[in-house]
Image (tube, rainbow, N blue to C red):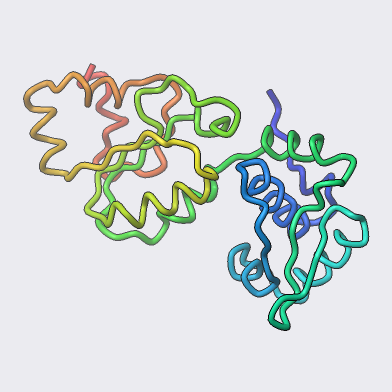
Length: 204
């Protein structure tokens, strides 16, 4: 299936990011308010661009706003007549791969990132992969869990993190689970300092 850049339909990247944020939060059961500065930081967009798009989306009745504590806050208009259609578009087109790449880009001591392609449709289907994400890394698991919860809008994500030493120990003893994870269909190697992908024939 050919993937579509829906920002070309919705006029601008900033507007697309806003619509995606609001509609996916709404679909996940969260229609809480967001204020401009928080959205500017979260979406990495200029505050003036955020303000312009929010005002425009409010004029179109896609969003509503109110003022609390001298701050204007925005939320989805649940009476918008195309609400279900818009939610469906953003759920079906959502692809978290670039967000995952960006998150891990400058992380230290990260030797391997494998993401199963099934994460692209995680909002629609839990998938049947052994794992969604496999990492060889020394990290704060709570921080990672928070990030994954945010970008998958509360969906359950199957992931595993092990150390380099533990990984090689398991391979030495022909650990079946590790071999199955590494050789699973539709794996995407986002980072592979250990050149594991080149050794798959040997692992199998």
